[in-house]
Length: 464
Image 1 (spheres, rainbow, N blue to C red):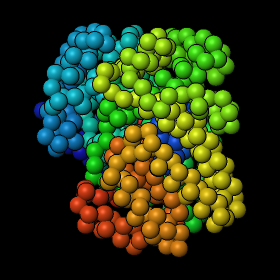
Image 2: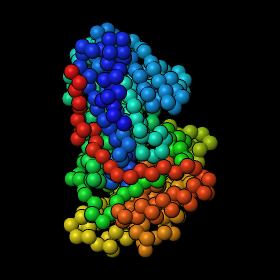
Image 3: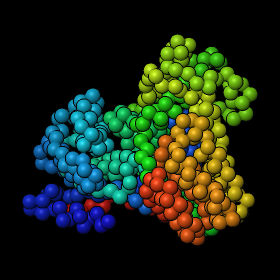
Image 4: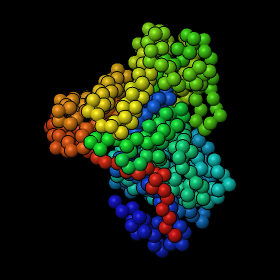
């Protein structure tokens, strides 16, 4: 879509945008989680790619105190796409959350008004007037390709530029993560925001989430390509499955710390509060796989309810997930996943770096096997899905002889998209997999093919 032309059409004497004030445009793509989904909040290494689909945002300052929003994608989805609010109403976190939760039709505004509130809180001397924001997107919603992070980053970067604030890199990613955690009340880690900010077309981004250490980008071997098939089954980071899986990992972490008599304390030095300790710095990923097997695997309960856990361990050490009654927490599986997935991603990353220099079919096969292992671990964590299981099964059936090396569910799981590592010329095989899946009538598949530059590489386009 030609977003700039759409913006110019809205810039008339009686249009949405004024003809006399500059407009700032930003773009943020969705992301495809190749490896590492769900180990970002436990400090693991993740391996992310951008997709071609993206969200665009245009921002223009007003001469009054009004915040005016126009979201074409929201209107197309049947929601309330236009909204007007006074800047003074965004006074504190609780008030902002009440505004964005008035109805499901305006829920999307959490990702936008949350940004404005963050900028006002962080840069009060800069936010002296209202703003107009226009949004349009091609990133499918609730499909595990981070539509929320794309909105947050595009809007945050454009709005910040309009107010004369330069936000980029890790600072931009962390700002948007805070909005999703605090205002949208979704307990996401940092990988989505970091990927859509720093990603580049044709490259994979390794990121150590402690809290956000981006490693040098990796270019996949020329023979390979990353494909994504959307299962048509919705996934939500705010869903109970994801919330319970995340909470379970932190419960396991606290049980291990208690067993070792290691004190766990709340660190409030950054915008995003977290619990930490003197040995693993609060990250399960810093616990080696062999050490976990040696000392802690047999120590952890397979399952627990919240009452039993709190009776023995007093506090829940994740500020962003509640412990709920009548929820069974898979403590062993999710704690084990955090340790094992970090190890798998490290192996995947090193195999990728080596294969980028010297192509090796054996390396491709090993990378694919790591993806399959990761996929089946999701089911143990309670994040599996019949739809994505079928897609992975179809990929595995086509196999290496047809150029398919590996496949896995992405992001938060429980539906969404499957990432596929394959030869670049397997388009007909991918079409066959999609047809077989469509014939099973579990959902309507959608193909993600190719990548694009992240928000920082796109930069900010100014229309004066």
